[in-house]
Length: 210
Ligand SMILES: [Zn+2]
Image 1 (spheres, rainbow, N blue to C red):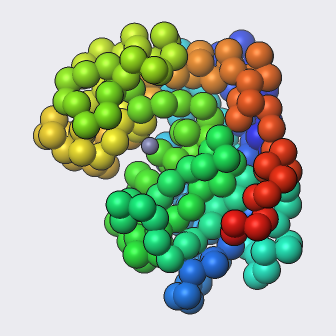
Image 2: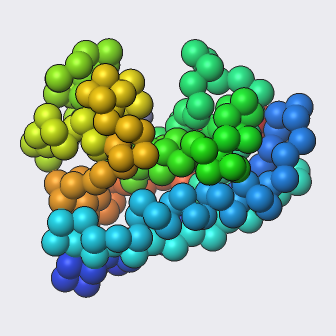
């Protein structure tokens, strides 16, 4: 469940999520939850250009799949992700799968970028650059995202890590967002098209593949 309220330049976002581990490795999910909350606060609770972003998350730690709420976002630790990527967002970002091999680094706040980046996809943002192409614009992104400058792309939260690295920007500095991305968030919210305004229960089969 994502709630967005806008009052002039003040934007309040609230996201409700479930957190579950379906991998074969045990993790302290309360500790993981704590790191996730800190990392999200650091990126999403600040001024972005003229906008004042305030975000709150409530995360419920679950033991069993049947406890998952179809109306909440699902954060799910899994055994593998294609290409051994740290994470992957599917069902329009409503489920964020976390690769178990990266969870220790996320818990230790060594990896502070993966979670905020994936939440960015949930908020409707695309990578601003093209696939595997440096100094490029993502032609399938929204016109507002295409307006980012090359400097903005290099230090943007929504760029893939290789892009920032290639530009020589340390990953902990490549966490910026722009006014254009915030404006896209309003636009999607206004059109009710964020996640195509669906919840996980739209995807009738979702529980079968978790
Ligand atoms: Zn991404």
